[in-house]
Image: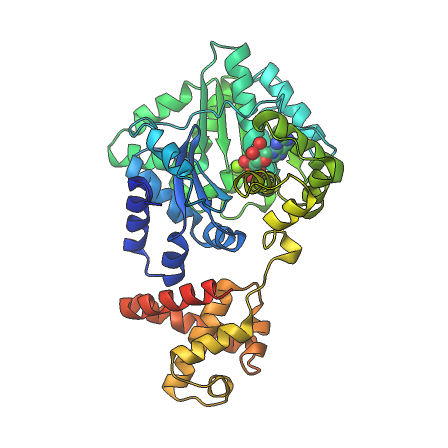
Length: 443
Ligand code: ADP
Ligand code: MG
């Protein structure tokens, strides 16, 4: 599939600033799609998703925001991109190019289609109360929970409810990243006053993923003053975060005190019944297909921590059955999720990895694992460490063990050596990239 212009431009910009062959290799297979609420990045595997999210999320968003000159909400999803159907491509083309000035509420996220369970009961009730009477009950409302637990969904549900039932109230909805960006733009163009006025006009301010304000001192100050102002005016503020306020790192104390001055409430991962109920809700919302109960139970049993992944698994099973013209049953589900089901995720074969690295450098496996420290052998070994760290879930100690019984500090040192060399040599970066590609496709 030809990549859309947007994906290609975006990837190019990211790589201009970062000489990381793994990043380059991982970005080859992604597709960026504009959605109602921002962008979704489709990536082909959970490993890639985790890697990109943990190490590069800020860069990915930042680059996109630079391109759009506007705050952007970026979601990531595991989805094997079906190169044959061209579906995704059509979707990308149909999205208007110039039509995302600010973040908008996602109309798909409502209270009605949010499944209640023991894990989110109190937060759900608080969110409803706030949406019914903004500025009256819990202010601010601070919602925290792990990734994919429905924080963004609830925040949008509040916004959508207010928009419907209190149409005269002004709702301002941002991710903390978007807020930061807006502030920086205002600073750069000497428009801080306009910025303040704009936000101060909010009756309901919704800020998603507040943890992204870490270390952004000036933006934190701006938010602090804004919160005071809104609070005095009895305006509603709702914030979400991936951790409880007191655990937020590199955020000013006085801001944290503000966060805890209303109601702090959490969302936990859903239990088994709630997971099945969520799957049924998603089917009801989106899909004409009706998989039998046992398929839903199979999915619910294997995707336990993250509702986004739970949903992704369901979508995958249904599209797999459709494209492969298979019955929507347990066998098909198992097949579709092979390699995705976390416990059964196909691990990188260290033996194969070592063999391929050795071959690439014209060494034998024995040489690579030996105690020899000639520059050539040592460097190949360090590159093997680096690749193993990126592609596998092994710990440093485990990688060291596989590579001839080295301890974890040696591995750590090896990896940072390679990172250092990559900064200096684009040629080496390209070489490692193609090696990684080969190792990936050998699995
Ligand atoms: P977070 O912001 O916490 O990372 P999201 O709000 O983006 O998570 O949720 C991820 C996906 O899971 C969304 O599609 C959302 O609709 C869905 N989801 C999460 N919790 C629930 C729930 N209780 N009921 C229905 N859908 C849910
Ligand atoms: Mg979210």
